[in-house]
Length: 297
Image (tube, rainbow, N blue to C red; front, top):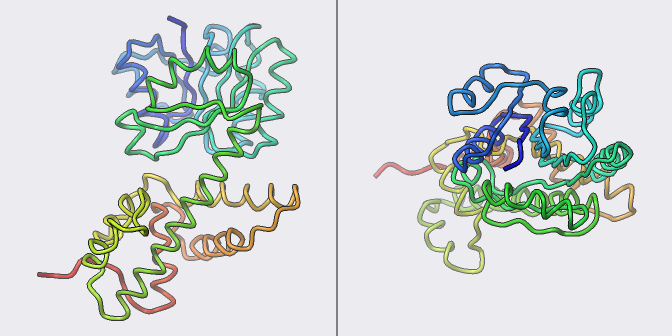
C-alpha cells in the first residue's frame, strides 16, 4: 500500500482520515491545529508537515477551506512542493474554483506529478460513515491510482472529465443544495406563519415530489433548532461566491444563485457564518417575524 499524506483535519478531514486508518492505510497527517493531528496519531497516524509529506508520500490528499490555502500549502515556502518527488499524485478534495484546480495541476505537472480535483458531497455525517460522493477531474490514470482510497472514504467516485470539471460539478452541487435549503426555509416559514404545524407539514409532503435528501437532512435540524455545523454557512458562502465569479467569467446568467449569495451576505452581517447552512432559515424567519420549530405536545 502507498504511503498516504493527508493535510487538513477539520470537520470533514478528520472523519475522512479516520476512515483511511480503518482500512489500515499508512497515513501521515498535518493540520495547523496540532491537537487535530494528535487525535489522528492516537488512532495510528504519523504526525508530519507539508514538506515531509511531499518527500515521503506517493499519494497526498488535501481537504482545506479555500483555493488560496491550497496554493499556500502546496507551493508556499515550507509547502508540499519543497520536497515533492516526481510521480507523486496530489488529490485536492477541497471546494475551490475551477481556475484554482487548473493552476495547481499545471504547476504540479511541471514537476512530473499528477493532480486530481475531487471535491466531495455529503457533509460531515457521510464523512463519518464513509459514504461521501466524489466528483473528480483529471486524467484516468491518475484517477485510477487514487480511486481505491476514495472508495475507503466514500460510496461513489466518478471521473467527470478533465482537470477542473470536478470543481465545476461541486459548484453545481452547491447551487442545488443551498438553493434547496433556501426554498425549504421559505416554504416552512410560510407554513408556520400561516398557522400550520411545520412538523406535520414535513411529514405530509416528504413522500411526494417535494421530498429530497436535503429536506430530510435539514428540516429536522431546523425543527430542533440545531444549527451545529455539518456544512457551515461560511464554507457554502465561499462556494456560492465562486459560483457567481465563475458564472460571470463564462457569461452565464445566474439570477437565483445571485440572490442566494445576497441572502448569505445578510447571514454574514448578522454573525451566523459559523452555523450549519440550514441556519439560512433565520433570514426568512427575520422577514416574517416567526420561528420554525417543533410544537409542544
